[in-house]
Amino acid sequence: MKAAQIAKYGGKDEVKVNEIPKPAVSEGRVLVEAYAAGVNPYDWMIREGHVQQRVPIALPATLGGDFAGVVSEVGPGVANFKKGDEVYGHGIVLAGNSGAFAEYVLVKAGNIAKKPKMLDFISAAALPLVGISALDVLTNKMKLSKGQKVLIHGAGGGIGSIAVQIAKHLGAYVAATAGTADLEYVKGLGADLAIDYKARRFYEILKEYDAVYDTVGKETYEKSFLVLKKGGVLVSMTTPPNEALASKYGVRALYESSGPLIVTENLEKLAELADKGAVKVHIDKIFGLGQARRSTTSTPAIRAEKS
Image 1: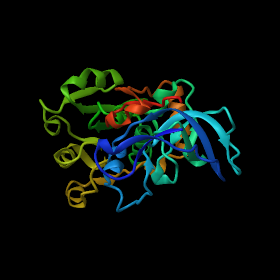
Image 2: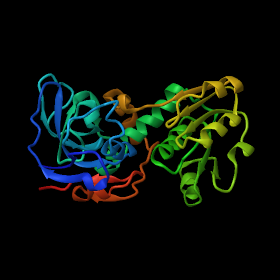
Image 3: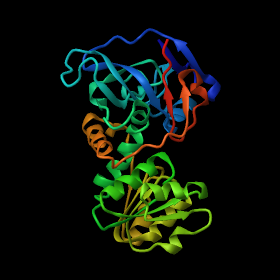
């Protein structure tokens, strides 16, 4: 089978599409024929070696995490999937899986779920990491409820766009920051107020918000404390909690790392939202597997080429 791999850490030219043996199914694992794989910033971070000190991986390694496809084989001890099931999930090597930028993915059964019926394979493949990130932050860390006010930074991006939709589904009032080109798109997602971050200072406009979801970091993170009311919560995807600022403003500051949360139970909750029409996926670009080195870090999916 074909797989997009790295043999050493470095730039995009280190990504090679190799012919390798199809993984053999094993205890507790499922072999999935991948129809599409999502692209996330974590993919290039692995490629460049930014995580090797924390989570070393054996090289050569197949890149890619999010994917969707059809079950080809089921290993011993797996009861909730069968051959022919349409599934989606996270096949990243950091979790002990075989990597998603390949024609077949060997994945732990606990890292997949039945694909949302309302989404095609490409849209489903772009959803797991961004969707679980948004779902966990809004429902678990923020416990967002109807009538509350939330500010979502980077709403034109993968995580931010899903977060806007879930927040509206929960009944919140949603303010969102985005670039000029994305303002209409963000409004179309359901944002009550879309702010051009280059033209307006969000912290001079918004006050007394219950929660802020930061996917941008740096100055945006620090200025977000000004928006919150006492007892509010700021959750960041990029910045560890600044306890000094949290104490100063009387709020909670939390950090989100969603990789370990991409498990069957959460994927099923996300699929339910997609099937209700509460979550739609925007695909930026589609690449063939042979073009893996050209893939970007926004919200595209890589379509797996067939031999």
